[in-house]
Structures are given as structure tokens and as C-alpha cells.
Length: 325
Ligand code: DGY
Image 1: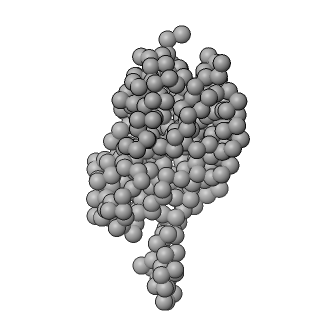
Image 2 (image 1 turned 60 degrees about the horizontal axis):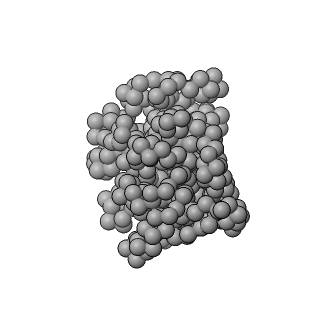
Image 3 (image 1 turned 90 degrees about the vertical axis):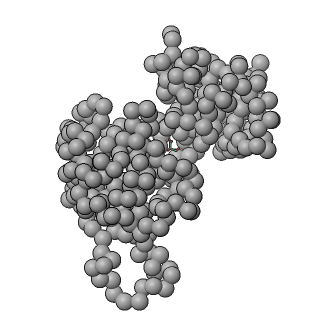
């Protein structure tokens, strides 16, 4: 008999067809007051869930007493309570690897747009405000040759460092839970402590996952340690930084600019003080948002779920270390 699966996202046709071969699907495109009753009804009998972008805490998953596997179409897993899933013995599958290069492309776009004030100046052209030759008040700052500090040298951090070092001659320094020999050998990356990285980098790029340890990692104290010319980039999760402290740092000019792909609250409300700052470049969480990569992530997540429901969590399980054998 086919397993029951609750899908809370739209899948590309191929991934949908593959999932349908293996599972009886109840599909939702989100969760809100209008569909909550039907969503909870489907949870009551589901074996697996697959989707992304919704906080899936115990308040929701308690409604799924038969749940055997969870598959998120993302590399980040902070929308789940890891301890809760471990207590229930439920594997949490995710999609590392397939999005590294695309996300690094996005982060490098953010670095370049921020340093060269590309969004602000392009808007000036569109809005008819380009009335004379550009002078120093609109100059950006160089990227090539500048020092890039990466906080969180995982796979995506490495892909950013590769672009920076091999393409832009940038010296790389990094902080991470453990040393990344590959980055040191291939890219001359220097392993350092956080204070040194913050004080000496021209670009500070945060790529850590959001965990209890990294929540609020970068706040007023850390922004104050950065160079006044520093550019801050966040491609991890909004809650890794104190957004109010960042706004202050940008307003006071204690750092030069920031490029952000992630926010404490998403979608970012237009009333956010960040939206008023010319020295903030704001992307709508598009790290992995290309057609090719989103298709690959969906395919990977579908395979992950099918495998996990068949008892195979050998690849792409984010909480395997917490599950009892
Ligand atoms: C991820 O995969 O975690 C990206 O941030 C998209 O959510």
C-alpha cells in the first residue's frame, strides 16, 4: 500500500510525478486559518511530510501521530525542533550539496551590489535622477584584493571563498567550529578567532546555520568591532544577527554597508527601517532561487522522503546523530 504524504509546497511536474508513484499525496500550498482544519485532518493519518518555509513545531507535528519522516526542500532545518523530532525518532531529511554553487553566486552578487552600490545607482537611472557625471559621493569601493572574512565555512562558505580568492584575488580568513583543511590548502584561507576576523576583514560574510548557539551571534558589540569601511553580508538566517543593532550600525556609519538575503521576519515588511537605508542591499531570500537549483532541490527532497519512508536515511539526514539506532 502507498504511504500517505502531506505536501505543503508546489513541486515541479517531474518531482510531483515521482512522489505520486510512491505516495498518496494530500497537497497544500501553505498553512493558514482557512486551510488549517483540512491540513490537520491530513496530518492525522500521514506517514511523511514534505515542503518548505513553514515553521513546523510540536504544535503542528503533534497532530501527526503516525509521522515517520520529514523532508524539507531546503538545506536549512531551523524550521523544525530537532530535539522533538529526535524524541519521536523521526528523521529530518534536507537538501545539502545541490544548492551550494547557486547560493554562492547569490552571495557574491550581494557582495558586488553592495560594494558597488549597484541597486541604489541603477534606481537613480530608472528614476531619471542621473543628470550629471557620477562623482565621489556615489563612488563604490573595490572588491578585488580586499580581505573576506567568512563566519561559517561549510560547503556554501567554501564556494564563496573559492569565487573570492580565485576570481578576485581576495585573501580569505574564516571562523568555523572546526578547521577546513580544503580551504586552507586550496585557497590559502586563514583560520582565525571571531574578534580578529571582525576587526580585520573588509567584507564579513555570515554563513552559519541557525542554531541555539548561533542565534544573535552578531550584535552591537560585533558591529562595533568591524572597520568603519566594512561591508557586512548575511546569507544564513536573519536571527543569527541582531537586526536592530545592524540598523543602528548602518545609520551611524560604524560600518559602511550591508547586503542581506535573510531577515528576522520574512517576507521583510516594507515598514522595516532597513528599507529606508541606501547603504543596505536587500534580497528576498533568493540564495537558491534559480529554476535549475530549485528543481534539483525538489527532486532531492522527494528522493529523501521516499528513502526515509523505506527506512534508508544514509544520505541527507540532518538529525541522524540524534536518532537511536
Ligand atoms: C535553504 O535551503 O535553507 C535556503 O535558505 C532556502 O530556504
